[in-house]
Image (tube, each protein chain N blue to C red):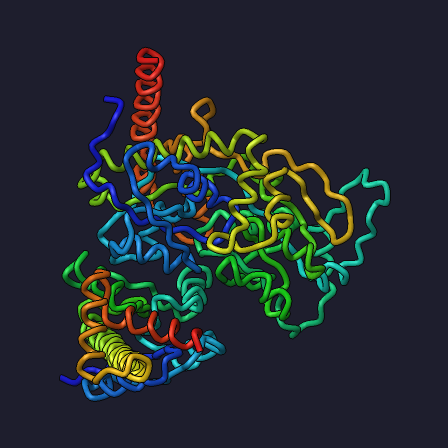
Length: 195
Length: 363
């Protein structure tokens, strides 16, 4: 027995994330109808493709267009807001945390839709982690830069060694119950304005 | 028991950029939450659907939501097994219907110069629709949520004028704070939205207020405090403290002499982020229907809950009335009326009365 693959319309204004989600969905055998970066023309796209599922960022204000489709225009192909497929409250909570919302066509069983949403949730989450680790790396880079600058300034002003400058920063940080970064920033600001 | 042992003193509450989010904002700014041992974090959301999903998904503890929203959860989230409930109606009324300046001008309404007669905008719209050429794109009107008081008010207004809301015009849903921009761009021809987004369109010269919502359906429940049923079961004392704090804030707002302070708070960047003059209109019961014209009085534009009035009591009768109206949009379930919980409201009144009595005795 062969069943028609479930068709999906993806709306996401984050192109990298959209590519991740689309890639995984296609690999899992879903029929990705279209990938939209904004809800502009969403009504038209829904009417044209009649998707089984629409996947959209929970924060997107454009979701309201789907809300109006689902109830106000009863005679249209209607994606019905779908929330709890399996696992009840836990499923909802993790979808909200991941930032995924999904609308599905009437008559589709929630069990058939859930795996697609889970794929999107996993991709949304790993995108989030990717961004967080990028931000962390950037922060660490910034931190190293400012500490190096502070050390350089200390070495020049106080005529001390690199090791002594490092020691000074660490002692200052410990005594003021602060981080090396904060102390370094203060030193840079202070020594620069004192030119 | 004048003090409550809140199970969960640190709470996150959700609201939208609307004048009738005032009870939450005022309670936060004036220390009403602290009075009952709560520490509240307010989080502003953009759209009703997002707010609803976050509340049900447990990303927040409670929210100010549209009164019909918990009653029609089965229609919008048919697979959701987590019902919402409400023990406090925060406010009634607060909306209006606005038409784009372009549409209003094409209706060729002649204003009575002495203001003695209100022009029949609905009738003018009806004849305008009849005169439109076949094949012309339908006029589009926006509401804020499928099952919102706004949708009911818009449909009521259109129907009263002999216009079929399902076939003669197109109805769409947009977030409240995007209404004015969509009207300016010509994406929509009119909308029903909560204040201050009607007054703002008039002040910017792009809209004309056709009618305030209270002229259509007086004292219609508008915003309710909602929590999920499982949250209520886990945190009954916290829920009582929350209702008490918000009923105090609603009472404070009912006193018109406080409204000036309320306007100043609401206008701040972290809340509505709009000019005080825009927010002031509806809280002062002043309706600026047309740009440049003096306001007319619109008493009761916002009716906030008060221990001495019935506006705040969420009765099953009120729920059934809303459900009957929603039934015109899509079939609803009468059993849902029980999500309006009048017992919880009575519990709040009893608690506040007891607390006041104890304070008087110990004074």
